[in-house]
Image 1: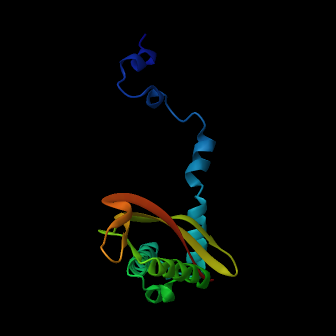
Image 2: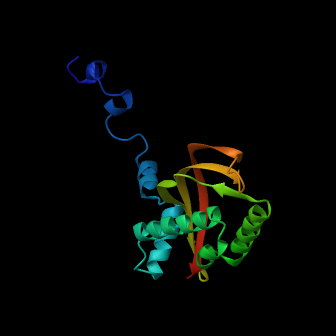
Length: 170
């Protein structure tokens, strides 16, 4: 009655917005200041490499992604050699050889990337490591070399995601 307590009944805002102040101001302040582990890792990388820029890095990731995927579909693993760690490249080369020996090819028609963002980052006295999630879309199917008959998958473009880890000496 005239002291403002009845105003909440006529307020269009959510109930929590009509409560003056914060219920747990200390916890809210801590939550707003706490950086995610990804942010902490990226900051550690930038601390010893002030030239590191996340946007530039993700552009490089996209270029590497297309190099690796094209090498896979073209069955030419040598074209991705310079951008892959030894063990990964040897595994890809062996898988490609399996496709060649089986007289088939994996097709990734209409390959596009819609987004790339870091999902993990870490830096220590030996390595800088960033794992990114790559959101892509393509058709994904295997064809035989002789007639181009689809052996697996289909020609419909579908979205998919992969996590790739990049590492360099710190």
